[in-house]
Length: 67
Image (cartoon, rainbow, N blue to C red):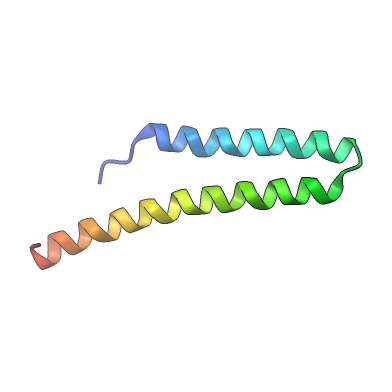
């Protein structure tokens, strides 16, 4: 499996953007919105990681089951 460096930078970029938005919203007193932004960012990154893990399992299945 060739993990692309772009994926790592995308995850880091999303994390940085979410952290910045959360900080701004907390300073404005919008704590509820800040929590939602954090949750949405977490779900997006979790989806990206789940896709990568799915690709890994597909490669493992191809190697051991010869498909």
